[in-house]
Length: 157
Image 1 (spheres, rainbow, N blue to C red):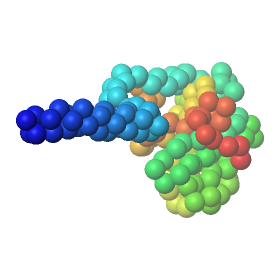
Image 2: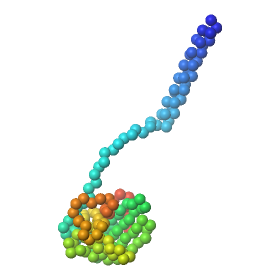
Image 3: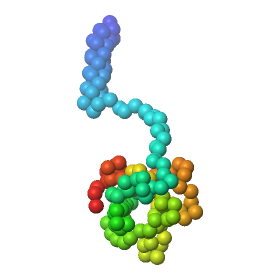
Image 4: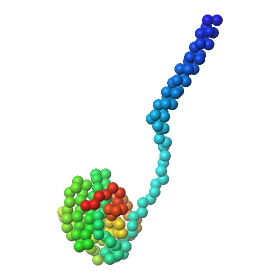
């Protein structure tokens, strides 16, 4: 009889203790907030402006263009007098003049003995691997410098 009475007293105490533990867990979860769900966002393709046939006369190319890299941000400012200012990820600036190719859609910048070719589009310039690279077709983030009012987190030079 003593065993039954002990079991009858112990059972409600065990349930009460278990219920307190559940409340504490629920309160802790509410205080910390719900755990984030694994959400997979769809990939959105990025499209870049096309390079026109005669960018020199059809595009307002003057301005600052920026490219984000893992090391920082690169910037190129093109002037209407065919001058440029380049700033690399470390903040080092170089200045000079650029030349237009005969197609008037690409410019040539010679810096420290290196030749750099850029295709000019409305709101973007694209670094090309060489002078024979096509200016048509899709461009990508690795070669795109976006104009300062279109680039994310870019600053004016």
